[in-house]
Every structure is written in structure tokens, then in C-alpha cells.
Length: 174
Image 1 (cartoon, helix red, strand yellow):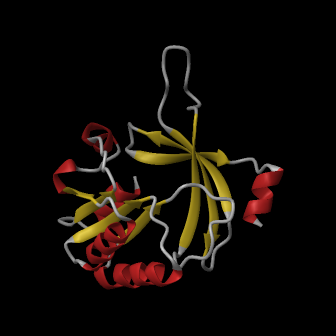
Image 2: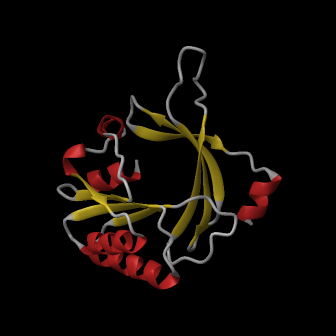
């Protein structure tokens, strides 16, 4: 959804999807507003290749957003990505495995997303995709947690309610 929003905000720019084995599903992406016509899939089996492609993509004025999977850069590489994003004017997203101690980063924000069952789900209907969304870190901002669900009719993420913080979540967010 963030890629689709970046694509809408920066018309004419492409989205770069970088993974060891990119497995984008165009009909699903179209449902959340991401055009497959401007999607560039990059196969980068080595982490160094993925980070290089991400940095080059972020610097390029023709790329509006870059998404990488699973790469965990050191602070120097993370800072280079941040500077590249500032240079190119796009957004960089990095999907990483969940880690109890993720370590330092140069990223402006850090989020944790978890899938959740739709409030409209029933025995014959799965409902819309839903997530538990937690902002773990933000420069100049406060952590928080929400429940969100895709509203296909309006083409947007709908915030249902603030998520109830469990004791474990409170510890992580504090």
C-alpha cells in the first residue's frame, strides 16, 4: 500500500521490487492500487547485490519507491540508503524478519506488521486483509499500535481502533 501511495504521489516514476526471488502477484498488487506497468522486479540473490540495487534505485529520479526483502544492512549501508533516498526523492522500504533485538538503524521509522483476521470474516468469507500495526521507533515521534484493514471500496487502509498493548508489546514499545 505504501508503494502504491508513493506511485500515486510521484506520477511517472517506477517502483523497484528487489528480492532474492521476487514473487510479486500483479492482480493482488492492482487490488491495492499498485500498477504492474510501472513495477520493476530485480532478482538479487546476494545481499550485497540487493543493497547496491536499492541504493542505485533510490538515487534515480525515475524511481519513486524501492522495496527490499530480508536484507539487514550495517549502519554504514543503512546511512547510504538514507542519503540515496534523500537525493532521489523517493521512499525506501525494507522488509526484514522480525527480531527481538533488531539493532541500530539509520531509518527514520521502524514498524512491526502482523497479519490478523478481518472483522468481517465469517465461515464463507475471509473479509478484507487486516494487520496489527506497531510503530516501534520514529525520529521525533511517539511509538504506538493500531489495527488496520484494507477497504477495497475506498482503496485505502482503514484504521479500526488502537491495538490493545500486551505487557510484551508495552516493553518493546517503551
